[in-house]
Amino acid sequence: MEIRRRLTWRRAAAAALILALAGGGAWHWRRRQAAAKPAAASDSVKVSRGDIELRFTEAGEIAPKRFVDVASKVSGRVTELLVEEGGRVAQGGKLAIIQPGRTEAERYVPFTLTAPIAGVVMRYQKQGNYQEESRIARLGDYVTGLMESVNPTYLMTIADLSSLLVRMKISEMDILKLKEGLPVKVTVDALPGAAFASRVALVSPQADKDNNNLKTFRVEVALGGRDGRLKPGMTARVETLLDSRKAVLKLPISAVFEENGAEYAYLKPKAKGGQPAKVKLKLGLRNETDVEVQDGLQEGDELLTEKPAEPGK
Image 1 (cartoon, helix red, strand yellow):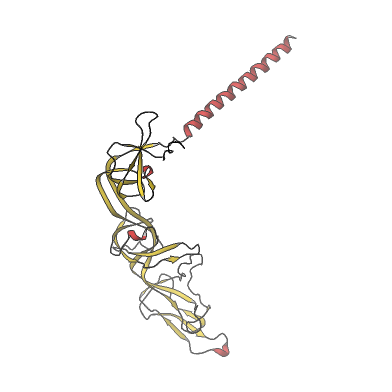
Image 2 (cartoon, one colour):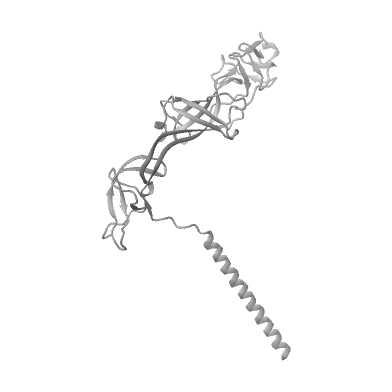
């Protein structure tokens, strides 16, 4: 009996210990969950005085300003390839020899393909189709010429790398922010710390549509300065300050509500149980987070960020 009582007591103690550990674990788990839970967003904001800046920032891709995709005039087989990728050629320099005809019986006078401009030999990449691998024609390839097809075989691209652009596609919501000649700053992901003073060179007058029917406008930025490290295809970021206001009254956009074309804010009641006061606003410059207050509010006013329910509803 004594042995049985000891065993029973040990089992009870072990069970109590397990429960205590489990309870402690649950308590610690709840503490961790509470610590990890994000703080609730404030239901009010204040009108303050400060600066507002409206900036334009967009990414694009570096590309040569002047380039030519090279195709043969005649169809035939590449029997000589006289250049390599990255090689420099003068205007009129020999690129390849094309032997017209598919068989020995069809052999005609060989055609010499020459460089239309001076520049660097690059792989041909179909514009806008980055899913298709870029390439340079190889020795022995059969190519279709310009005289026989509206879709000829492009053997390579010759690019003048002395003048580079940043090409971008801008949404119709942002295109009116840009104009030709606008000064911008360009940074390149591959060159941290480097910045290039540049200018907008082209704002397309009409939109392009993609496969999803989304409209974008083509914009080109003439890259200022020369840096031998810059290469076509690098990601570049274009930034500029469009407008700014110094030491003005401003409030977060989250406190602005639109009704019938007018904009309003709701003053937070000072007394518990009071009703919010609806105030019509006259607003100025705005960016993604803040807006300038020109009339209707004073510095320090506290505003609701949620539209209050109408009385009786």
